Image 1 (cartoon, rainbow over the protein chains, first blue to last red):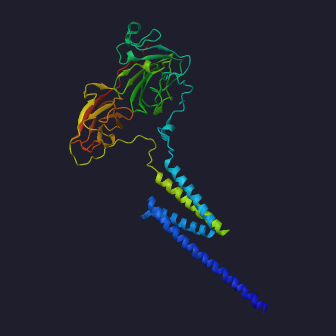
Image 2: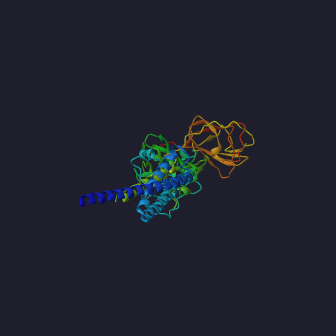
Image 3: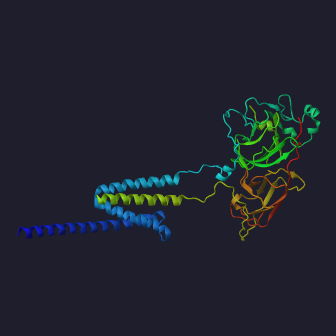
Length: 280
Length: 157
């Protein structure tokens, strides 16, 4: 008799457990259905809805929401609090993902960077008070000759004194606007900034003589789009830096004791180099 | 216990889906910072014909030798956007078109440098102003490019 009573109690307990599970399941289903509706509504609002692939995300989210909501409902109010917190986190993630800008402007593509020569060196310790950039970075360098209109150190390219000393040089294009900067043989000549702006320099060609060469570059101001042209004379043959480069990279090497610089604008006009470079 | 695990797993799934979706939505066309190739697209056939070129700097002079970095400023009778310009370049070279100093001006320059010799730029009919007016005929401009005559490499000073 006792055995029979025990069996009945056990069956009652099982039935009760089964009913609980069924009830839980029904609750879960109802909560899930509600969450699915909400999910669809939300996905439609966010533009996920409407069918096709985009629905997949919304559907998946809704399905996830259904499961989560169901589970949350089953877990009581604590579940809904977690849902709320996670929703806030999700919102923050979306907000950060949409409004953060991770791509740096003006960055060179990798292939160009990798093409840069191993001799490339970024300018260092350029004093902000320096009026203009200087292709020669050593402290002992000096402007040994300025332009015709802006003579420096008692010398102006193309003026009467200069032309009496070196008459064979006068009459050439751009000479009157040139400048000379002293530097020992082998000193790197850095591609300069112009008016404080970084220039994308493109190697054009080398004009080679018997013992030295001219390196020629075209430049584009990365900020304004302005075009420039520069020539470095008295350089080591073959010291030009092929490809694209930014200001601060090496564009050649001094052959003897100075570099002669000629600089021009995108209007095919020579510019007074001494007013753009090495001014202190 | 199972319910809590189910809850956490579900929340993680939602989080991952939303994160991936947001990344996919944020993705932009890959450019790699490279210069865009020359645009030589076919302009639209509809033409109203009220956009025209008013001036070009430097003025066309095929005998004048320009530096390889010569910029060409083209002014129009209406406001212009570089994106509305269709063109062809001969010989084919990469160029950049940017807004000039005024809204009616564009500046055309080589991406690096013009090739030596004569380069012809043609603004194609169908190029449009910002107000939707069209250029009704091609506009052609040529320039002669040469490296500046300069001191020989071995000159002394």
